[in-house]
Length: 79
Figure 1 (tube, rainbow, N blue to C red):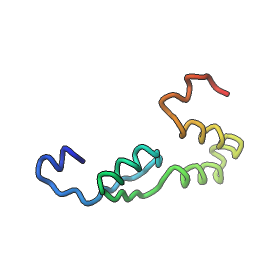
Figure 2: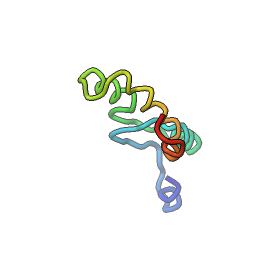
Figure 3: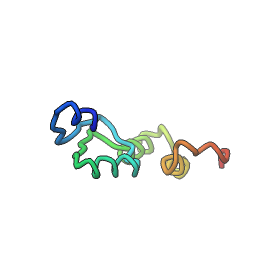
Figure 4: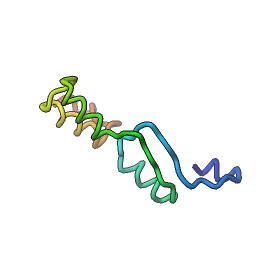
């Protein structure tokens, strides 16, 4: 966003197909004053994955743990 603004563009919003909803990304958009609109998100995809049998409800807590800190998730090994 900053590169676009530095080039003289006015960034008023952004559209994406998907968001994980990571807090750091949400904060960055908020701080930049840019509204983010997505077609779907993490919660919706996980819900459909459970409903369709692609994953089980028992697997959701593991996915949620990954989502809290994906960069370091495996540092402690699989729980």
